Image 1 (cartoon, one colour):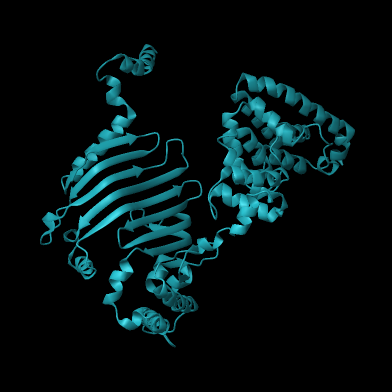
Image 2 (image 1 turned 30 degrees about the vertical axis):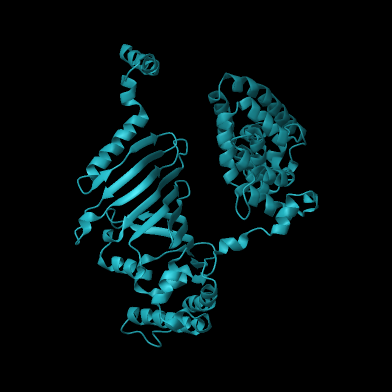
Length: 537
């Protein structure tokens, strides 16, 4: 015990001791940001065994999950002729993970600003492509590589963006409904398990096409001829893929295109001539309805399986841009005529404004539109309101989450749980009663005739799924079920008591009054419905 007390006293006095000193202290050595910075410095020194690396400054913010390096210069020392002269520069690089308080997210993001390298840094073939385009060096004002993984659902988002000065902006996005690995057969070499929702590769022209077009056959760059040429060239390439992958014993036309391959050819035939007339953006994206399992073994053996899974098409803009709000509707919703919106219009615009999808984010305007819908029980509106208000206005968020969860939005129960950790339990009980008054209405007689029905209603009320969460109302049904000899009813009642005890003395005091009301309501129902006789039958 004395040792524990000494350690506790040391930990408590370190920050004050550090402040009292004019120079470095022990706290400077063990301060978390400093420890992470030392670890990154060790990583840089290990990297220097393979290449030369310099930087001006390193800054670490552990709470935000961010490390920043500035003034970076790298000499990768490639082995090809002239490679020793290769130098890569970057003004700034930021490495980010999820903040410490986001325990459900695993995030890895690298952002690079002001990067530049010469053609000598590339192997011979890519260097030849740069020479063909008349480039001596490549300048990248901004580049992002990001993987955002949600532990609870195993959903993942992958995003890569590179803006290349005077050439193009390349934007790659992939959304996975589920992404992990299967190690049942070989844990050391697990197979990926991926359910893809969407994927998009978008290239915006900053001058690349103007450099590339003179190198191509004139008929390929002529919009009047490009349609048929595109159809022929792309169709032939796909047919060749099918032939090369076909089994030696395959019968029929082994080069025949599948419907998904034909859809790609048709979309390219339509999009390419239009791009030639106005070379701004070209997009390759999936058109998946829901999500699709990626069977990598089947895809590797059969290109038709790849196209069947991804259903790729060529377009001039991502499909997400087609979901932009109509400007007239947006102006109507944010003007003096907002009261004339239909509920569907109010929901559409409100969700777009709150989430910043389809319209510029304006949380206040979105909440104003969604408020009446949320109060009337609209599930999508109430969930959006709860999400938007959770941090700033937790009491209002709790009310909306009660509504959303009771209408089937399971995600809202997580919001309820998080807010209950922040607010006093006495206030939580009152907020629950604002939505479901413990003294309003008699318990339905049909439920009182079945122990299973009483048990289920108690479970629904404590979870908040299907019915608004209410610990006092859940207690009514649990008391009745327990009185009828149901073990689950007793367990639910014990769970409620345990929650109150662990929430502190104030919660126990507040709960005593609510439990008294619940007991009285249960007794009234038990006696008024002669439940011993009814249940005995």
